[in-house]
Length: 517
Image 1 (cartoon, helix red, strand yellow):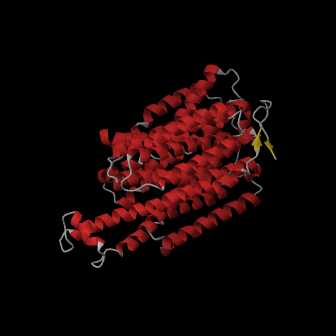
Image 2 (cartoon, rainbow, N blue to C red):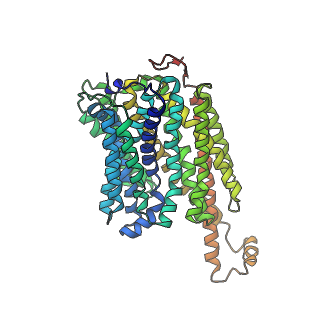
Image 3 (tube, one colour):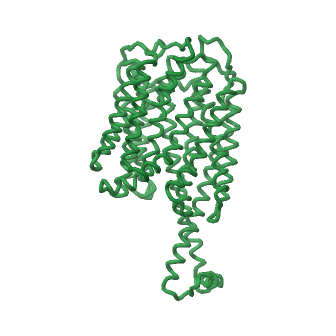
């Protein structure tokens, strides 16, 4: 038995369960918020720390790499330390690293401190999910996942809004200092209320850890620099892809053939619900983060909205997701979760399709309502999918499975963001070449367009005006093609929903629910 097996549901309900929920929710929101809150502050950090545009991205990369490596170790450290002690170490280390990031004076310092943030923050989301799963009876698990999902989903969505406000009103350092009061509250509540599990001896699979670390580092390098280095035209990208492929392949072979200690046990993927939910969640990354990447670029670069306004216009997605998660928490025991996932994907498709109708004259309402629809759909997907993933797993595997589940979600999101960025860049270049071919002295539309601006073709500023407008139109077309890809990502996920097993929500609380074949 794993150590997590020693944790039973909190049966005295009421205040104790509420405080446990509050403690792990605060930790979840703190970590999830930190994945996006720093993004909008990067230009300010770049100038303050004297970094180049390429170097400042290390602030993001270092965090993602460290957290990606340590997420699968959640089960190992939970066994060795007990879930309460490990949670407290993680919260305390994350808060300390956040404070150090806030006082960093140069690029090497903040990259190092962001690495520490990733190391300590890696377990916060999977461990909080595991604690929520263990602390409630199976019949209440859907509602618990709804509460937990609010933190995981709303944190990244609200990050740009809060980050833009803090950076504009105070400075970029407050995007890190904001973690301190939340972290202290979470630490004190967790120390008082979170149930512990007895530590047990467990050996480390060092070979598996090295292989997985190499694969994750190579993958993240490929995703970060592939687009700017023209992907496989770059020798460094070719080497990184080879290392990533060999690393993951060798890790899987090692995990299958290894008879000693394992980093995590692959038999968790024998559970159909967990395997299919993990696959769907990794595909979900493109739909979840695709629009979040594209819309700020549309609002700020093409439509000219200020950073703070852009943040507020992104907020409805988070609010709609929060509302749908609350509704899911009330109805998940009455409706099969896979039907909720299906409805969420349909709404995500509708919202994404509406975004493909954007243009450079789009109004505020036309920008906001697709965000609301898509955000509502995202909430219907995330919570039921997380519920299904753990509905048929044994409780003693929850911490280990939560780490793997979070890792696949992180990798899927990184791949989705990279695919969207590459798609937009390539299609923008195609549109530039196609539209640019129409700008010539023989096109009768050219003098009419310039005349409307009070200019003629031989005016010295005409070329600059035409180049600027060509760039805007080309980028808009490239963005529309990227929105089409986001829409198709939702459509592609639809058939996989039918491979999820049904879950029986009202079983004896001493056992996990089982899937119906």
